Image (tube, rainbow, N blue to C red; front, side, top):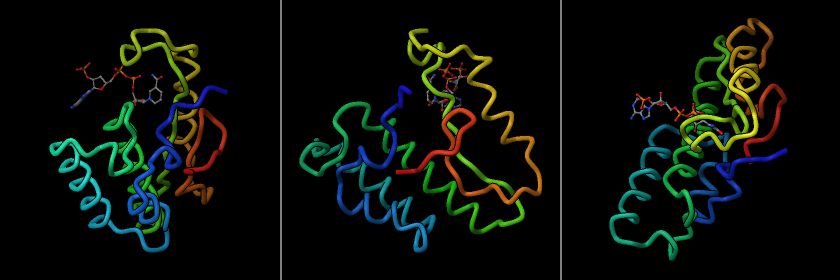
Length: 135
Ligand SMILES: NC(=O)c1ccc[n+]([C@@H]2O[C@H](COP(=O)([O-])OP(=O)(O)OC[C@H]3O[C@@H](n4cnc5c(N)ncnc54)[C@H](OP(=O)(O)O)[C@@H]3O)[C@@H](O)[C@H]2O)c1
């Protein structure tokens, strides 16, 4: 299956990789600080030398931060199902309609996750309707 490269494995910055991957010690403050460091590195033209992704860097870093935030929320609010879901490579404006999935296919995962209740499914990452990994 085609996977968009926003998973953590595409973030080469060692500090970001370590902190965002350390789910037990993740905090909102840490995620915010990493995002600020990334922005500063963008301003100083240090993306490559600091190990941030060179292509689609803002997109990838924002998704890595979003995934981290998903895990923080899931831990903080155990009674609420908080998950991340990718719609897959879908025909929309974001890719000038070059995606391979239809919008209907892409909507299945988010709708399914929005409708789950009391299943204990939380803090997870889904590709379409299938559980995948954050990494
Ligand atoms: N399509 C794919 O292949 C694909 C794959 C993986 C993940 N995703 C993710 O799925 C989500 C939806 O993407 P999509 O494919 O539906 O993209 P899209 O067709 O380009 O739609 C993006 C939507 O986000 C809104 N938006 C953009 N910037 C915004 C901002 N600063 N504040 C508020 N709204 C803003 C846009 O509003 P306007 O229309 O008003 O500009 C638009 O409604 C995104 O998070 C994307 O990263 C998409």
